[in-house]
Image (tube, rainbow, N blue to C red; front, side):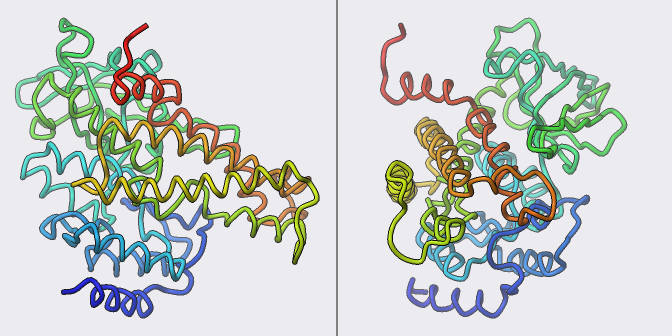
Length: 399
């Protein structure tokens, strides 16, 4: 099929199958992450998910045998463009697509791929990440969660923290220490654990934004089946690093080929200026604010074009290399600057927490601004990313 024919067919299918209620920005309670605990504030969101999953378009690059569509990079770019044209929401999102799915394609056995990938693509199962611990954050390799061989299974004991979405997840992918006598970066394994068991306890952490996307996760004699070891025993650090590259690619927007920027769902800054300041013509009287908005819009567009070029030039379409640290760093910092400008445009309406005097989108923007502060920490802090860029990308000598 030619690309022009694929575009025409895609446009026609989306027009006929994307419900009007799943176009435009989604309220927080309408974002779909899948899994057995998923509820649908908008019933048409489930219809949209099922239709896209049946096409393989929830994971369009994955092989068809694993629930994907096996699309080429060019076809995926067309799909994204056509979805953007009608403001179609992503039918589902989450760590299954941005982290563990791509990692299983890299390192998983055929049996692991067959068991887990189709359930991710259909939205049947939701995943969370077990990396950080109270004593192992930026220095992740210091993790101490123990995983001991019990003959026909592994027994896991320890604690993870900042496990985003753990209260909704069915499975967790996690790094554990399987050889406590080995050096810090050795003796670590990458395993998959079913969270629906008595040995797993989740406690949400309430954040300054009022939401609880992060959790503490405790393992008390939790069971991990041996066939859920990904990669080699005691060589999980290699698998874990690759997953971090996929995560950083997702956080920066690189995984989407630059088709969506961080916090773009609130609209462009010029449009927000018209909305909040009532501008219909002319220009902002505040020269500094006008300059900052123009600069941020230029930076955003240049960043998206750079992401798209990097995606097109990479064989995988996602550039899972050390370059992801560059994109993650810049995307997080640029996104935070963007949120600050959005609040500046809102004026006193940015100070709302609740109440009828504030619109729903104003309240959502303020809470997202508070939540956005974590974007420079999640997936590795900005300082960690700069160290990786200096060492792995620029090959600068150690101090």
